[in-house]
Length: 166
Ligand SMILES: [Mg+2]
Picture 1 (cartoon, helix red, strand yellow):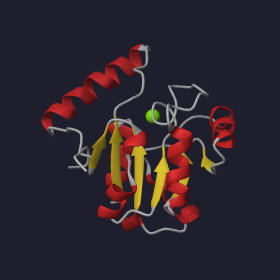
Picture 2 (cartoon, rainbow, N blue to C red):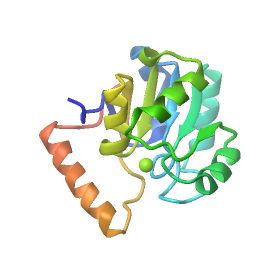
Picture 3 (tube, rainbow, N blue to C red):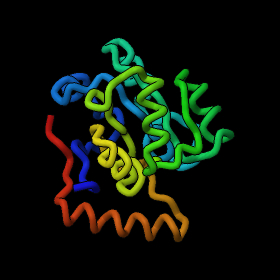
Picture 4 (cartoon, protein in one colour):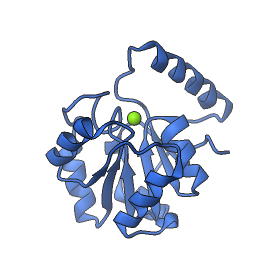
């Protein structure tokens, strides 16, 4: 079940403190592209600033882990005042391990939040941290991504991945 997320939600802002409490999660590793912003966009997705504040108030630790380059990730991370790891090489475990260390959390209390099954979810399940899959904000236009998304749709069907009820 390496490709099946523990939790599936539509948007990052659908992650509530009560869901996190239910799954015993105190730390979130956040993807950027199509999770917090559109692919390579610098604009915060709707409601993100309020959601970040809610997480802060709830004592949830946050860190960005992106496969993108520093020059893409750093300005966005600065905008929302979060630490980040760029060139994260997801789904390989190294970035996740560094992130958990930086968050000073434990694997069982940490979740990865992202939009891609073959990077975010696969790497998270491999390390046995919790996995929260989101619907991508806006589908990418490139051929490579269109193929990836088509394969993902197959995985959604096979594992009957549907939005998790609170
Ligand atoms: Mg992404």
